[in-house]
Structures are given as structure tokens and as C-alpha cells.
Length: 242
Image (cartoon, rainbow, N blue to C red; front, side, top):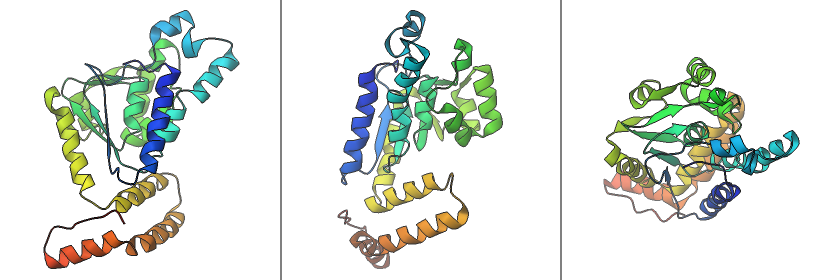
């Protein structure tokens, strides 16, 4: 599952636009097709200076800006929770793709590497911003400056993933989390994710102002009223997305 084709980048952009517009979608689960989650950029294209790696330095820079860098801009900012079901290796851009998600569940056979430096290149898709926010700067520095891979249990200990399960059950484990999230009102999920994202770079007083505004909106939704009524009536809520 290499990530090098412009059509792949466009698929992510189109998917995010579709999810953002569809208020009926509550959670997204992202997984790989086959034994790997994502192997990163196509090394054969790098060797041949083909595909997105073709052309002058300016053209390569533009290929990154108009290609793979569109994925973190759309996926990380998506206001629907995204769960990564890491069915296999997540290497280079594949690891960064996993870090764009909110929650990561790993197969016990998976491995993870911020391996750009081993190819004499740098994280070109936001990894230097994403990875430290997931595992902390010291561990991110160790991974990025050695390029070495870590196994699933190390990833769990470092907080890179929240759960490690047998490979055959990784998708179901991710879907189980998705169902727990989707049991909540859709507006609450989207507004809460926006606050979590904004809180990573806003001052506390600014985030409190945004929280007050979002809370005022939430208090005036029908689903909030239904949640309170169900809680007091000791029954299961029936949300309508309003």
C-alpha cells in the first residue's frame, strides 16, 4: 500500500469533503487493504525520479504541496472522529497517516517507523508536526533521527496506539470503538473533536471562549434535550441528529 499516486491524494480529499457534508456520518475507520496499513512513498519512483518525485526541485516541491500534503490538511482537520485500524506495517508516510487519526488500534504483527532519514529525505507530509504530538518530542526524535522501526508492544507503551490485538481482530476492535463513539449525538462528536484539535495550538483563554460558544450551541440542540431526558428517565436515548 504505497502512497504516491495523485489519484490517491484526491481520493482522500474527496472522502473528507463527503464526510464533512454528510451529517449522518459519525465516525470513520481507516485501514489498509492487504498485509500492510501503508508502506509510505513508492521507493521505486524515487529511484527513477518518476511520479511525484519527477522534475526540478521546484516541481518536486509543488508535487508535495499539491499532492500528499493535502491529506493532513483535510484528514487531520476533519471534524468526524477517525480511527486507524493498523492491520500491518505503517512506515514513513504510512506512520504519519496513522498519526493524522484520532485513535489507533494495532495488530500485534504491525510495526512502525518514521523512516525518511534512512532514505536521505525528511518527513514531507507533516510527520515532524504530527508524531511529537502523539508520542512526545524525545520519542519522536528517536524515531525520526534513527529511522528505526518499533513493534506493536513498544508502540502501545509509547502511547502511539491505544490497543494491540491479534491481527485477525484489528478491524473489529476498531469498529467496536467506533460504535461506542457513534452512540453519542453527532453534533457533540464533531464539536468535541474541533475543540481537541484547536486546543493543541490555542491559548487556554482562547479555547475557553470557543468552548463557551460551542457549549451554547450544544445546549440548544434536540439531541441534548433527549440525552438529558433519557438520563433522568433511566432509558436509552433516541438521537435524531438535530
